[in-house]
Length: 363
Image (tube, rainbow, N blue to C red; front, side):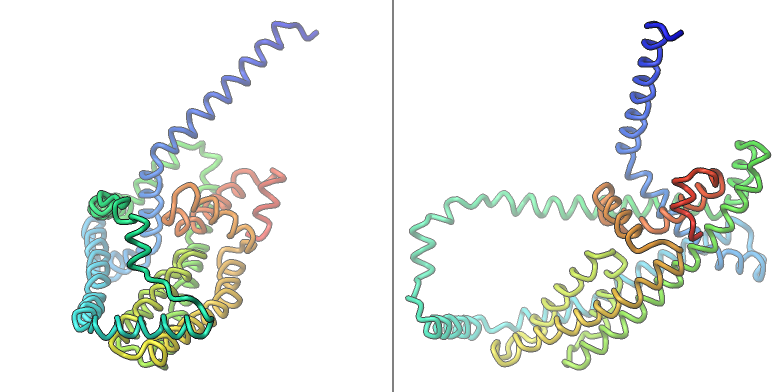
């Protein structure tokens, strides 16, 4: 017989469970940066595994030496990536320093007059409008100092993040066998096979994913390079490489890359006629980039999402969107690998669950 005391105890237990779940979720939200660092380190560890095995098996390196060598290689790659863009920055700075502002102003005035004549618009004195509106008095120049401070803060956070990620990755690589052994001790012996199967499947799927992603970026880079070289961009290689790297960020990356390519193209053509040279060339570059993205979205990405990680494109979109809202751009980048790992683990440990079986039927 159900009494009021049983009902009250049930309600209290339910409230306690909800409270515990809320506290756990809040705690995870507060340490989301650490979770992101751990995920990035785990991905780097998986990427580095072939190199680590080569160093251990072929060159007879110890665990510490193999881990140190791998981390140094990662650092060299990042430094090389940064140095790759120094010529681009110098080139664009030279273009701006050689800018003929008087000629540019006369071009702007001529363009404004042509538009007014074509559309039969009465001339508007912008200087008078600005003075009458007292716009300058309403500007808060503290935003500029705030912007500079935000840049400095971002650079500091980025440096701290890189140090943290490399530190965690070093121990993931060095002590991965110890971590696996400890994981076997923590879980019951009956789950040992499930753990080993999960690790094997995760390694297999993520290796396929990263190889597919590398091929996708290579194809996008070559197509971007062809577009930029057709229109005679002096820094075609660097711009194409940067825009291809931005494609790692799902959905947003290609848009940022196209805008960046348009801006760099306009800066590289400074000093030429705006109507006959700068504007048409920029439009053609944007159209070329949009065509490349159409090829990528309809051919490369579906192959990666359906064949490499065996997930439906709608799953990829939703999990990327949720990760982006929760963890920002970094969350969008690691969404697919992390989602794949979770699916593999769920299938191994809860194969009879209907929701799990539905989500993991392709794995």
